[in-house]
Amino acid sequence: MALRACGLIIFRRRLIPTVDKPAIEFLLLQASDGHVDPGENDLETALRETQEEAGITAGQLTIIEGFRRELNYVARGKPKTVIYWLAEVKDYNVEIRLSQEHQAYRWLGLDEACQLAKFKEMKAALQEGHQFLCSTAS
View (cartoon, rainbow, N blue to C red):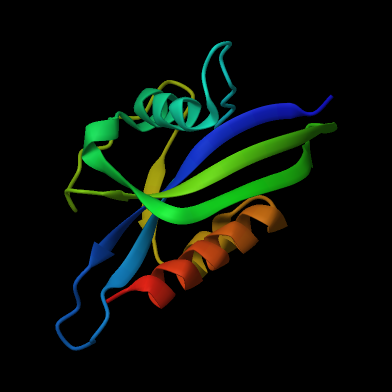
């Protein structure tokens, strides 16, 4: 049986005066091993993990409707399934408070985020999320 986890692809929009569209920056955390607790649904797990790992509460986020990705890959020799949603921070300057599981975080544009993403499936999810956000932007 595959390990199961859930998480959020957290992003913020930075307004660039010389460009029509805002730049999208993704939050990347160094190291994570989240899991689903008994009795939680997938989105509850993702929100709990985000609060535990980065100190960002559900009230500080907007979950983006219409984007949900299931990633399947091998981690540490075992199959793993991770469900991701897109979530935008409501405050561009939100304070990040890392858990002991994490050593660092960075806000990165799509190209840099994809370069640092560990798994090809995560790179694809970042690219799909970015494309989704750009196609639904008003």
